[in-house]
Image 1: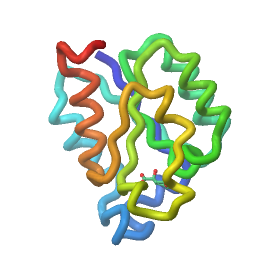
Image 2: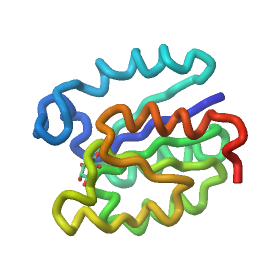
Image 3: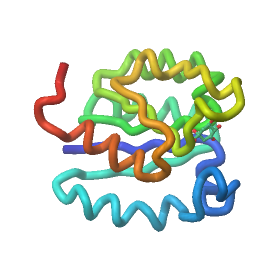
Image 4: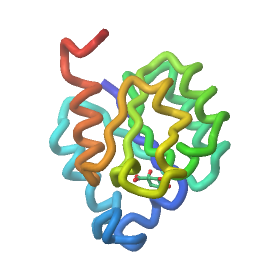
Length: 143
Ligand code: DQA
């Protein structure tokens, strides 16, 4: 099974950025443990601060991979282009947010992605990525 994790803008700063909200671990230090938990899954990782690059990566993997875990950062709340891209793909996409966006500012409460994703996980810190991969790989979850 092949799963692509895609992180959007400012998520390259995990560990440095607002640790009270996003924790003190970088994604690079978290990733080996995640891969070890799912030895049968090929987990690829991509991060970009650029909206069009996120779209390019989604288009690249979205017709051949088995799933995508997408934390689009602030583009979640702004991007119709990402919405259109996700709805065009063949593979399931799980929307992840490290923080609980619903307990934060109201501008974070709306997502352009949720309606076109298979599911949404937010508020569990980096563990949300584990949960998303668990959801994508567990047998018997197909609707
Ligand atoms: C985030 C939540 C977004 O509102 C914010 O813009 C981010 C990170 C999260 O993982 O909690 O950059 O997606």
